[in-house]
Amino acid sequence: MVAQRDARTAKNRVPQGGVDDAKRLRAVVDRLEEETMLWQEFLRAHRTIIEKMAEQMMRDHNLPLEWFDVLIHLADVPDGRLRQRALRDRLLLSESGVSRLLLRMEQAGFIARNTAGEDKRGMEISLTNKGRTAVIEATESHVAMVSTLFTDRLTHTDLNALGRVLPKLTAGSDG
Image (cartoon, rainbow, N blue to C red; front, side):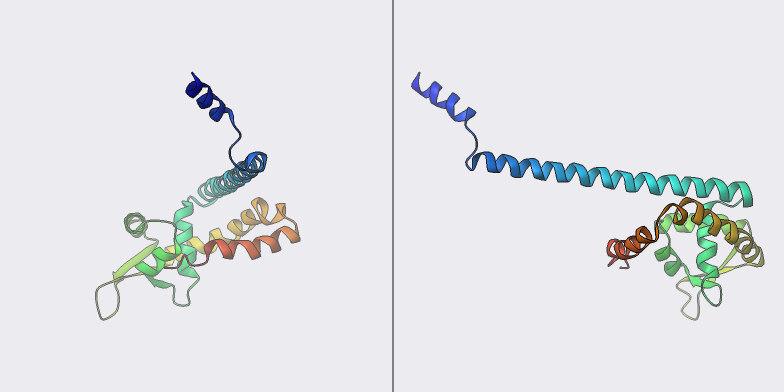
């Protein structure tokens, strides 16, 4: 009888540290909820912007956004060619995803894939005339869409804050 009463009393006791521990735990839970909500909002914003940009790219240029991404990366290098591995590192796709994407783009005539250099081990991806024309035609509307969906909605202070924060999130992701 005494043992049962002691067990019930122990069960109802405030943990050692008492109210302070409960407050600290509540603060941790509140912070996690706030961080989770912020993370989810970040993902929603990314998805919304990407979906709208993809719709616009298909509507205006009949070009998948992923294809434009490849073309703009190739156009951004002086000779318009990159090794497949270097290109993959700039994209948000797996090795097999990049290979399939590049095959479709090659079949459509936007890029050429050739054995790279003297070692013949890698593939070199280059813009074709069709790819160069497509990226030139699509870039102006893409830049306008980035402004409409992103930069025009933010203050100069917001943009400066992002300029400080985003590199922290991508630091060390190169390898």
